[in-house]
Image (cartoon, rainbow, N blue to C red; front, top):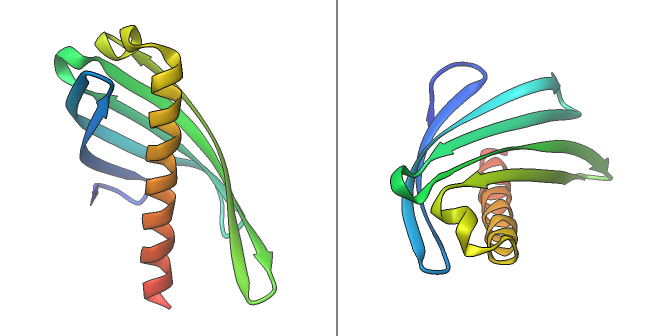
Length: 113
């Protein structure tokens, strides 16, 4: 993940959904930033012949005593070969990727304090 501006990041990631695997060149943009309470992540990715993915995640940071709870709701749209695999497989993979992202995000932030 490479920061390209105060609100944009470029990244490359590999993903496999059923028989379809691809490397995605992606962009994440932060919008509606209400620091330190909430923000919106807009993401777009191109996976060549495998297709594309785009969507958004609403993220809220909620104080809980000495800690902070991160809540999110993500929505995604896909096209190309990925869409042909079937929404049930894609939904499961999207949920897994979101969980991995926010777990890594939490680990990174925790290491800063």
